[in-house]
Length: 197
Image (cartoon, rainbow, N blue to C red; front, side, top):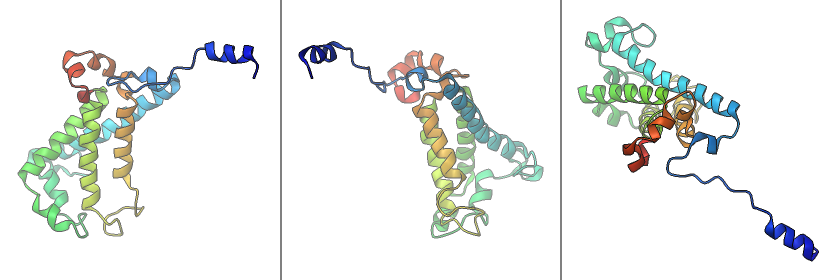
């Protein structure tokens, strides 16, 4: 390398790496508008999965919950699952032991909170953590996957895919596009406690 080439490369500005700040903006992380839009659609669809679970189990809309087993008609959303045939394997005694009215309230609060937050694009970090914990518990309740659980894959089922989706949405600040994430992150509470972003 010549002295001229060496001095030219030394004076050239280096490209600036993307640094994950406490409250990163999606445009810093995802540079293509089409990528941000795809993530927004994924966020809305993922949020609706949780919100729909809440609505169907609350009102018995006839998809996975018939009207007579609706929460408003005395149904037991988490107990129905935890005490049912879907829970199998060596962890069944643990999961049947936690079935209670408290587990119904916690499960339904989780479905509503995660569903609304993800659809609105706010609180994606806490939603990713809470959602992943709920989905991991549901995965373990059906573990090991097999003929009794309705799973079509012995390792990766829809619980894993939904949890990964929540994590990707939080890491890439997907609430900023077609959502209230950017506005949410400007709030003083969120700036003081970035885990609420």
